[in-house]
Image: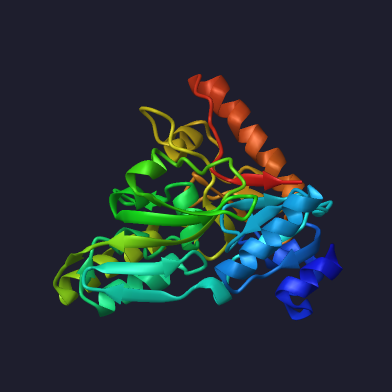
Length: 297
């Protein structure tokens, strides 16, 4: 497999035995056997064709900001869509970005061009591809509100372009959720705005995050989805779980919706704490919490 990959992507784009604690915002996880980093859609298609022909399953990684990886590590190859897949271009009131672009970088570009509508995403610590897969959102905004078109490649290496409507966005979900398709880019449609007002809104949202979220600790952001008719953080807090911990995994005392790594937590610590929180919230409120965070083993 590595020999074939080297022929289509170059050996310098292939890494072996990579600690996943360096690739996820939770800072946990065992060793990944192989990570490949394509720099173009053509390289990505060639990689996928190799996996498809050899019937090899794979994972797709962006910033690792919504991810828990088993302490035992990962045998499946990982396709990393990162900084070499992150160009951002502007035409009139539209931004075209590749899927490895950080949402914060897209928001900065929108600000530079006096485009409004993407301020909500400025503080979400992820890349465009992952944000589209899960319809990421914050402070009343979601990706579905601004997406004009999305390009992706299927597991056989075929490329497609679909509209925002065809993505079938819903709460933390899209038509590509749970598939092995890989998003390569998107067109984001915004509106012309006032640069000072855009900056003011971004600054206000950043201040809210600093005030309410435990940004000083490693985490994956909000650990749980919002239950219908409730807020996960409020349910967890009212169950008396603020500060609850397994090892260095802790329910944040600042915001109960966040599970944090205080320094030396393992993935198992975090998973045990997640299950403990779900159990106690169900006992107290009869509400089943679902995680936003994905798990790889």
